[in-house]
Length: 176
Image 1 (spheres, one colour):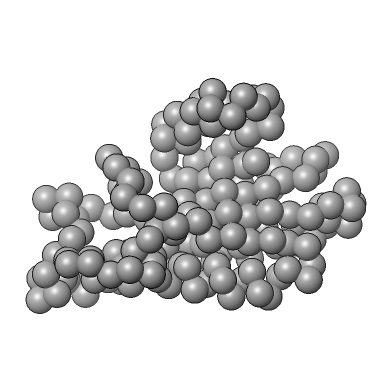
Image 2 (cartoon, rainbow, N blue to C red; image 1 turned 180 degrees about the vertical axis):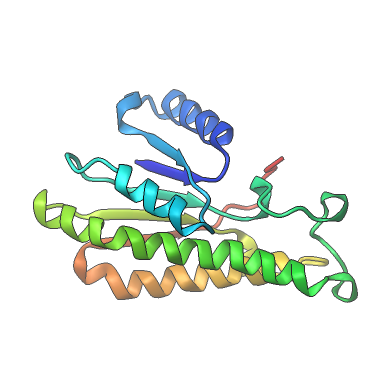
């Protein structure tokens, strides 16, 4: 499994927890800090990937990693208080970043499926907010709904190529 996020420290902690909780070898879990909105960062990451074993991807993306600063660290605003820039940033970070990464990884996934006679698994972490709105959640719910629908569409588009994509929607998570 190769985990990708913007914040290396959080990825390191997550890897340690996965190893501890699931008792899996360290070598089976890798991570990279990648700025998913920077094409060069993504290209550098993709070039660095090993070609000697199949890779899977687990991705969680959103404002929680500090990719965009909001006033008082609070993106949960009344509708009339949501600045258009916040909608644009959250949607861009979540959807565009995932799309650019997916486009760059698809050739590798296809190649590894042939080379290793295997299948590729991709997990994209969205949120229960993707399907259940709540007070002051307009921005967050809209972005998570978009990534959830994108993931579902990609799943339907790629399953025949043995690229299996899953949308995981956890409930409340303290990303701080």
